[in-house]
Image (cartoon, rainbow, N blue to C red):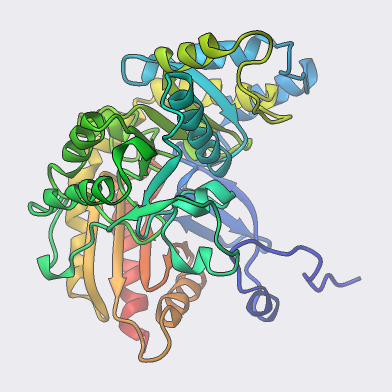
Amino acid sequence: MRNDLSSFWMPFTDNRGFRRQPMLLASAKDMHYFTEDGRPVLDATSGLWCVNAGHGRAKIVEAIQRQAAKLDFSPNFQIGHPIAFEFADRLVEILPRSFNRVFFTNSGSEAVDTSLKIALAYQRAIGQGSRTRLIGRERGYHGVGFGGLSVGGIVSNRRMFGPLLPGSDHLRHTHDPSRGICRGQPANGAELADDLERLVALHGAETIAAVIVEPVAASTGVLVPPQGYLERLREIATRHGILLIFDEVVTAFGRLGAATASEYFGVRPDLITLAKGLTNASVPMGAVAVSGHIQEAILDSASRGIEFFHGYTYSGHPLAAAAGLASLAVFHEEELFSRAAALAVRWEAAVHELASARHVTDVRNLGLVAGIELEARAGAPGDRAMEVFRSCYEEGMLIRVTGDVVALSPPLIIREEQIDEIVSKLSKVLERTE
């Protein structure tokens, strides 16, 4: 019987449009997906920013298979299993110094909500219980939990769900089209971090628990931070006793050519959220990394028993931990982070060739990520980019679009000729798009 594709309510999808014109991926290997009829589709987006080491990696597949046969599930409430602790130990080895505690979740959305809860619990534990306000940033994306939506700043993600968490507020975003096209970090704009001072003056520092930002705002269209912006935000947050959270669901695990954006920028937050590349997307998993003193403060403030009433059935799932350990091994053995750093110069030069392509109004890049902004059609924002998305698929390439921005973030195993292929195919599609 023919499947009419109606039973699965697809996320972030024009479900009616998909049923009219379905696009299905049946298998994947290394840099390519394959359709049901075997047609290769070059993955220019690492799936959804997440398959950093490429698809179908044997070491990861075999680790999951072994673990499923040995221990498929074990609870982590009041009892543990060794591989979750082993993975946490290995993970903190690649994180910035002092990040030596890991709370496992199942996704980036859960990691964000967990980080916000940790921030609130920590402030209460150190006697700052009045600090309940959470600050995000306009155009920020922090997943789809109610906490993440509250600090997130993408209007279309928020408008259907009411007032969300009370007391949340937002910094202004960092995008300034008047700068014109630039390569890497814009030279001007560090002063935009001073918007945190405005919110401190408006609400009072004693009410603000934490501020959360993506070091590079990805899902909103690849907004690269101005030089000095993150450093300035760190200084202001420290001065006012506000915890700084880096949402690194996208930027960690080599996307910028380092283990984390914190390492890349030389700016140390208080908490880091992780997901996506954490397991090379082979098994869903997220995490929050914190400094030991944050956990110790929460533990020491509890009189007895459970110190932090939060967690998930699948926190530290054995299969996810096995996948994570194998992914870290692949990253290390193939030196993929340094490989991405070395390719970044070639990537930058290639994607900026698109600045002169038809409909392109801006090109933004950092590490192995790029955003190609297109001029919107009058009265139909997003339509042109969606047409480009479908046309690229027909040309044998998967891209990501958000609004009228084409986002590119290929697996770190990409070869130079595949970089050229991405640019060539996208340029060809743009040329014939009205």
